Amino acid sequence: SLSDIAVLVRENKEGENVANFLTGHGYNVITNDSMNVKSSYVVNQLSLLLGYMDNSYDTVCKFAAQKVVDRYVELHPVECGIFAGELTLADILPPSYTSLIELTEQLFALLKEQVPMVQWRGETLYIQSFMDAIKDYVSRNGNCLHGFLKHWNEINPSISSVKTENAIQIVTVHKSKGLAFPYVILPFVENMKLYNEKKPSRRWCPLDEEIEVAAGVKL
Image 1 (cartoon, rainbow, N blue to C red):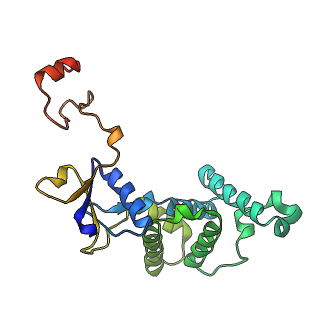
Image 2: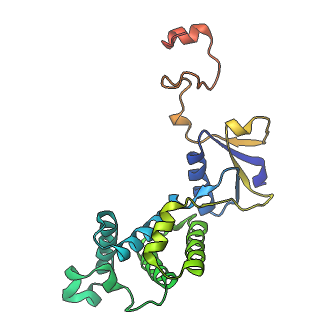
């Protein structure tokens, strides 16, 4: 049973990475901490492309948009023809869109064609949350792209893991005290240190005086 398995991590960010990996491979997970929607690769790309549509002079957004255009030209050389070097993001989108939601869906379709399938693993919940944020904003404020982007920059949306009994539990070491599982996985162990010189109070286990002296730790 998946509920017999626990993954212990030191920091919330590590837990988020593990949750993304497991959900991307079809496993149910339970995590005490919410997952940040803005950590999603696809969501970040969508927000950058929307940013370019709002302000084509923004350097970061322009770079992201140009990468999408270049990839589109590679995939559709005949269709682009002699104008390939002059195309912009607006040129490769359908000629018109009636709403902010429709524009986002068109950009999403472009990305889906270009982004490797491996990068879509675990992205579904994040994309749904992003689209929900757009729909909620549009229902309250209308189809103002600039207004939505400003709103998006001011919020920090997150999603919670699906509630189910048969799921792998991801928990930080700090919050695991008092819990017991038949199987425990400890990832990123190669990055762990028994003693952190920058944070002397952080130790994974009490060290005997002889070990501390041998390790050069000040008592």
